[in-house]
Amino acid sequence: MIGCDGGVQARLDAEITGSTNIRDGRFAVKAGNGAQVVALSGRLVGSTQATGTVRYSGLTKVIVGETSERLDCDSGRLQWKASR
Image 1 (cartoon, one colour):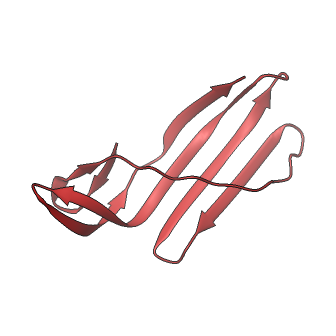
Image 2 (cartoon, helix red, strand yellow):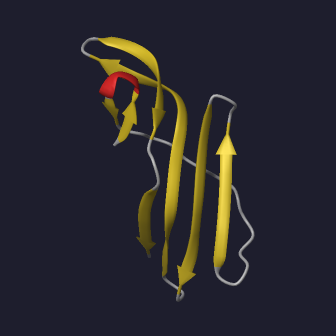
């Protein structure tokens, strides 16, 4: 969940595609379109796990009641974990 103007809570559905460099097991990716930015960083833990942080900010289409609005939103710094 991300916080938006007026105390509105929204769920983010975002995708980052492509590749990035990994140095000493660490990586960072920043993607955006001018109005929205996703910054992801992390580190590999062994050969099957990764951990890190992600932050999203920008104008976001959200549903408030029965209307769609574009609000300024920010996730703050969130922890993530992945495994395969």
